[in-house]
Length: 248
Image (cartoon, rainbow, N blue to C red; front, side, top):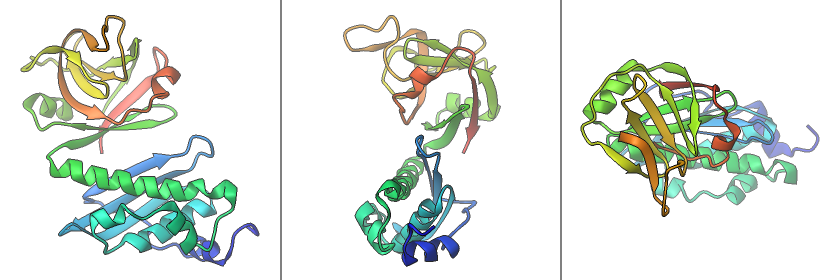
C-alpha cells in the first residue's frame, strides 16, 4: 500500500457512496480484462441532474478510491456536465495514482458514461437486458414491441450458443410470428429467428452469406433491439459455450 498517497488511502479506507440503487435510472458496468477489475455505477436522475449515485467494485485500492472520488465529484451535477469529468481530474482529486494503476480512473469514468447512456436509453422506452457468458457479459436493449415483450416474458434463459460467421444464436424456446421480417441486418442488432424452436441472434458482423458490405441473416428475422459490441468476444466464443440472458 506504500505506493498510494493519502488521498487514495482515505477513499480506499472510507469510500463514499458505496452500494446500489434498486430503482436506478441508469446502470453502467465495465471490466478490465487485464487486471480483472469490475466497476458498476448506479445513478438516480432528477431534472437532468444526478440526484443520487452509488458504486460497487471488485478491484484494488485504486479502483475503489477512483469510484469513491468520482461519485463525489459528479453528485448534484447536470448529466451533461458529469460526462465532462476527465481521468486527469479523478487522478488529481486523489493526489495522484501510480502509472500502472491509472487505468482505474478510466474504469470509473467509463462506468459513469455507460450509466448515463443507460439512462438516455431508458428514457426512450428501451428495456435493458444482459447476455452473460463464462468470462464476460454484454449489455443490450430491446424495443417496446409486442414481440420483444414476448421475449422478455421467457427470461431468464440459459442456452448453448452456435456460431455462424460473426453471428451467434441460441434457442429461447419461444414460438412467435414475425411482424416485420427482414434478412438484412446491422452490426450490433439483436434479432428473433423463428426457426429451430425460436432463437435469439446477435450480429457482431458478417455471416457466411453476407455480401457487398451488407450483413445478411440465414432467413427472415425480426430485429428487436441492439447490444454493445465487444469485437473480440465473437472470436473468443465457441459452439456449445453457455449464455444466460436476463433482464437488468
